[in-house]
Image (cartoon, rainbow, N blue to C red; front, side, top):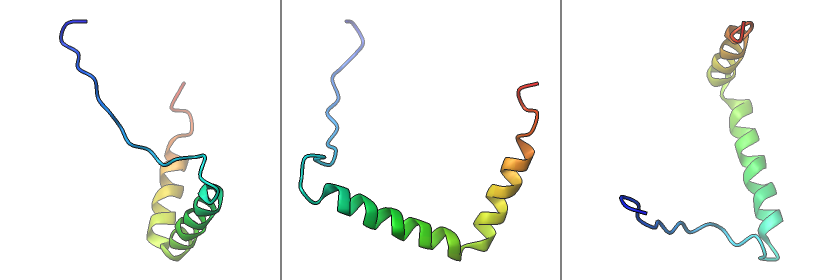
Length: 56
């Protein structure tokens, strides 16, 4: 196809034995960071409140 070129993207190997545990570890870290950032939580809450009726 003219104008297109292939792109290779490297992603984590989901077949590794420790993949699921590493996902859990990173999720815990992200959740802890989110809980500690009250400004971000307030921002997200305000953004969600602003979405009411956006499809109407």
